[in-house]
Image (cartoon, rainbow, N blue to C red; front, side, top):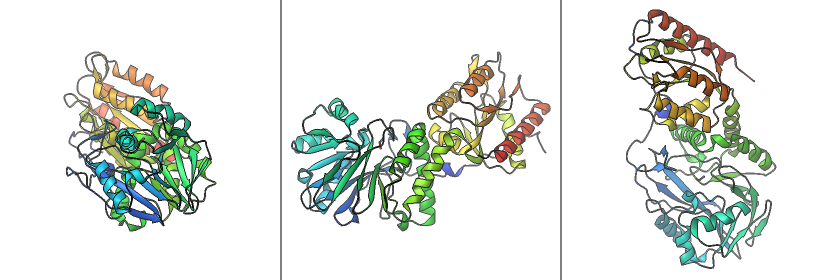
Length: 434
Ligand code: FEO
């Protein structure tokens, strides 16, 4: 092997292959029928803002509501935030179906996060008699967020609302993604309105259903579903597993989430994907390694090539991220799917390099547990990063293979050690199966 060079090629993981990095604008879409008298009413949001104030959406995101018209009552499932004209877009689409917001009898709030409720105060003003149904935990949140409680009613787990010819059945799904979350099921059409669960980032245009997408579009949405899961849902993976088990008795033909595409061709495929993603919390994940590195003056960087060569020698795919240059959204998505994690980081002021500390904090919050790992990097002037990293690794139950730490610039021997350690880690990743 050649460990003398420090020139390397940063390979882009597919997660970072952003198909549309254009500054997307919100765009109006048309209502789409899922079944007779059941429509998707959606708004596309552009790329200007960060989702939840944290996560980049270079491909935008869709906010999906669903209109269900019974013979006696009409219900709207989930709302939108008035974000880049979303409220106007929803109003226009309701009109396309022959409805005004004031014609809605019941508003079902599966979840209180403002991307699905932000328009509520305005709607309440327009339509004071609107009946709002939500979980018991959501009731006080309506008042806390929007300052009213009249006409707000809790539904219990398994309760049914009869709209006339159509029924809505409500199931609590706590912590998918906040504690008050529930999902709604319509038995005649077998549609599960799953709220955030099974959602994805990315705008949705004419092709709304999975069976209308090209292979490339499907790959894009699978990638954005993974990033959405890692960023938004991963921390609650235990609750995802519980919710899937609880809902497994339902006969589901269509999964209609509050973000992204609708799963109609094979709804089991997205459920299976979620089961797999949830299982990654405690490993093993995929036989891949995520290498995250930072460098102040190039000395820690000088080992990156040797580490990549070691992984290449074992033919283990590697997702490479430099921080702070790469956003933690992408680092987290890569780390979530990888059984191995390698951290390249110097000591800074007696402790871990601050941008990497911030990344590791996000990995901890998201429960990226039980990984094969090691750290390499400069000792700096004092050392300290390794001690702090060891404490972090222990907490995260990462199995560490030992560090490669050096004073000043790494020697040839350091490069050889880094190469060997990367190979060993790759071998352990390949051997790790349940
Ligand atoms: Fe899409 Fe948790 O809100």
